[in-house]
Length: 125
Image (cartoon, rainbow, N blue to C red; front, side, top):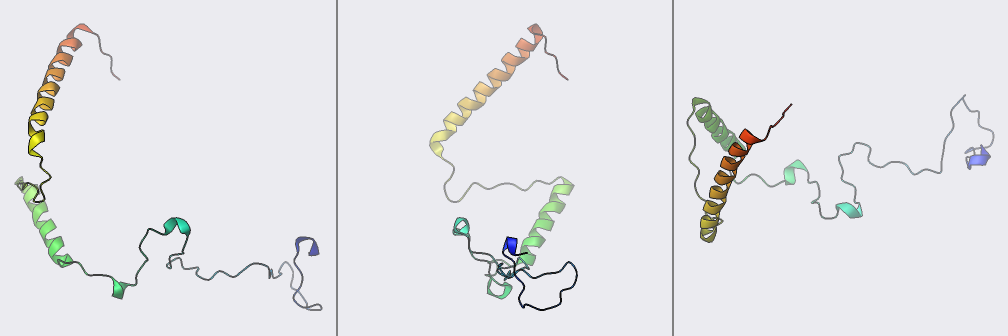
């Protein structure tokens, strides 16, 4: 045992068979895994807070769930919910003509592929 650096704690202690203590290792402090360890690569993550210190939702969670259930029922009945434009101005007016040009080019590409398929054999599996 002294070859590996393991020495008995007391000299004349009776040992049971196949059991010994290793005093060179540090004991594990948190074995439940709930506490976040501080590693340098996780510095940008927020700390894990206990349940009583977490911020509540600005809208109650039951209200969010109720709205989701109502939307789901409307979707099952086939009624679509109209989408509103974004309020923060993400719709760029200068890109609307570009979007129409892309759509027209896409239509021309599909028509060209439909003509090409008639002349070139296409094999699919």
